[in-house]
Length: 263
Ligand SMILES: [Zn+2]
Image (spheres, rainbow, N blue to C red):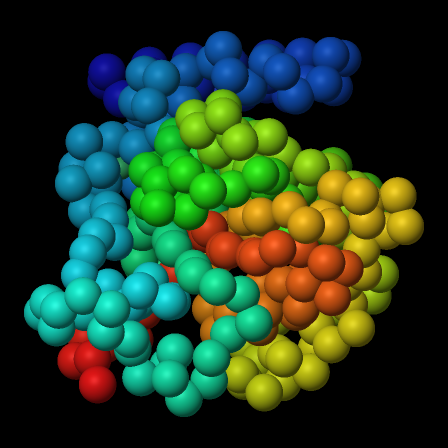
């Protein structure tokens, strides 16, 4: 019974939210009671219920110095993962807050496709914590851009929302518009590693007006999920070519294959 009342109330609030959203934009999302982004149980102001929260798989050391891929045991300082040695990235270091599992996928999807913009501050805080080794020597944060057509269809860039939340937590400013996605690439989902790299080739460019914000600066590139790293690698390449001092990568989640010992 209680559930029925809560649901009906939730539906009414949902309709009210739709009407308010249509009239005033997205700002109303924050003020309304929410459902857990993963299991859809009602939760006051938090993004996740306690049960789903306890399932979040935070990435913590020991991990690969370079890629941030967690190690099943501590091999000692400075040891790199197999991936970092076999296929060194263009960027300097990457870190991610959580492993890309069911709860992480639900959070990313809710933010990206579910209008759950209220999740960005929480996700950004987790990223700022995971990215502390990077933010201590950074000049600016740059979100991975969407192509303007996708940006227009979605109305917001999820990476930009996360970048803003990280900036709030660590004080490093966000630079918008310096990096552009000039090629409307198909989604990377379902593509192999080499197909992903090919897909994003030539997709990004530093805008003429953005050059000053990039040249000589220590940058942190922000994305929602690192799968093979092809997208952030393509971005880092053009930022370095435009004169960035170095580029680090900070993602919300990273796809981690089964536990693999370091070399
Ligand atoms: Zn839940």
